[in-house]
Amino acid sequence: MSTPAIHHSADLAQRPSGSMLLTTTDLVPGYRVTRVLGLVRGNTVRTRNVGMDFLAGLRNIVGGEVSQYTAMLAQSREQSLDRLRAEALALGANAVVGLRITTSTVMAGAAEILAYGTAVVLEPEL
Image (cartoon, rainbow, N blue to C red; front, side, top):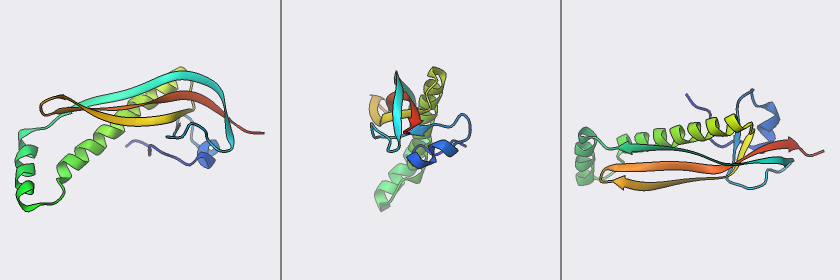
């Protein structure tokens, strides 16, 4: 099970070794960026399957959420974030700022989820 993608900046000092702050902001209150390590990213490409498409078609008739697709996309987002974290950790980062997540269609029935941001080293302000 992966760690939550977004944490509060106040929790940064209490993180277990190897965990990382991911934030959509460029600045983290109470911390300063001491090193910018560069762009990091993580992605995954997922395809639909016939079983899910059949269930989605039925759901389209009666309305409501297609929970199988919701679960698949949530898992895909977490996998992209896990890959982004791994790339940032390999650079020596303890945070990723300016985090963004985007999707695109790769081919009919397949979508890419891409997470990207800037790997940095944060230290508490004195």
